[in-house]
Image (cartoon, rainbow, N blue to C red; front, side, top):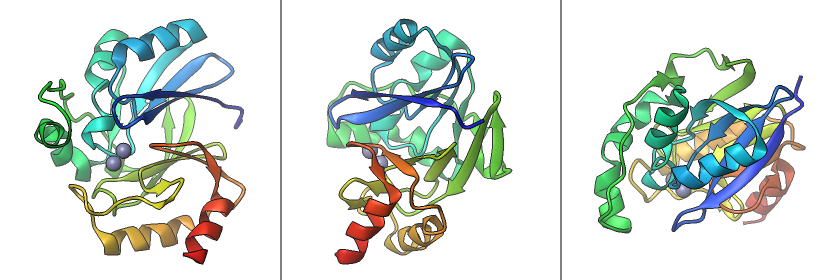
Length: 208
Ligand SMILES: [Zn+2]
Ligand SMILES: [Zn+2]
């Protein structure tokens, strides 16, 4: 069944998107929590859903600040690709550099997307994990039903930046090639900004 409902919650200085993906049983996956665990918990209560796991597309500090709080509150696992474990550990260095001195509580590296398989069953949710390095080394796009959670790999304005910690231009190009194989009518939910069709993205990308 690919009957999922996506709720978007925008939070933090960089207006990063946290996505709550729920199924008919009112269970919910949390993708890229962002920085505000209290507000996300409130939303979860409001929606009347039960969190089952946290999945991160990458470990830039603006997308990971709420993980520790949510893990503790709901006692749920946290998934990330091992190639971003170092970024996760160093998140506070970058936060101080780019934002403020208030440090975030870094969660321990938990479940590893790199271990495979590509098609995971996360607490009953079918999740395809597509490793898409380039924005960061361990960046992944997550396909749940026909929804692609792209993190900062695909952004509304084009491919993600490669000049931030973990970035690699050549790798990003290969990753985009990999994503070309997906049906163009998939909806993309990016790390920042509004959702868009994959088709729209390629069109814009090819014109540039
Ligand atoms: Zn990022
Ligand atoms: Zn971001």
